[in-house]
Length: 316
Image (tube, rainbow, N blue to C red; front, side, top):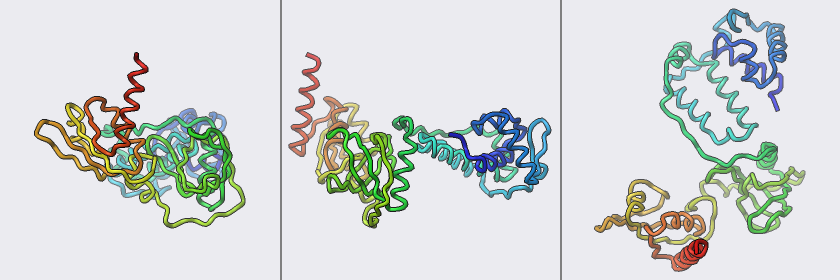
């Protein structure tokens, strides 16, 4: 779905301020509409006494039409990289918002910064991998966001890995991007507990008229504290010995905020960390194969042995 006309007119104004000599075809591509629509938009802007003229591209008759922002070139480039790297770009709705924000910023840059950025090669790019949003998911984002913002119970059909497709009502508290996907934390009336849900596993959702009381004791930082990734559970002390390349990997970077790594004389490394739940760290440890030996807790050791045997059986 394209932008509404009012939003598109503002977007065109920002484009013309930020980029010189754009013709109708180029503007149409940016706005994702036809050239005929852009010609009508230009007429609408002119009728509103916006000083626009055409000379090898559309231009403002006055450079004082919009105020400038006192961003330095480095500040602008940092902000541009942040906007372009956001995982929100995977959502058509939020991608349009980020595109508008970037255009408005560029439209109000100091002329000297605008000139410098023409000859500046970007030095940084951030690629945050994420799951591909399914068709129609932007509507689901909007439903969850509305429920959070207005404290309304949301009814949804949710495809759980463990229990399959179920209808349930939830009190949504917050949305978060973590572990390559968008999740939201909510109180589940079906399970009678606070749970973590993944956006792309929602089949259908709508906001009810029933209100719920917001909880000030629920926050992303507190809820995911000590978690290895998304899953929660009881706090567990993990101890393992890494060898070979795995030991160097462990010693060269941080993998959890509260980990403790102790180098050993034989080139090995002792790894200790307290996490909530073992499912995710179990998968991580298995990825190092024979270069890691789990010492504790006993139930994690047994689980890794079980999965290792299952892997071997698949190749017999």
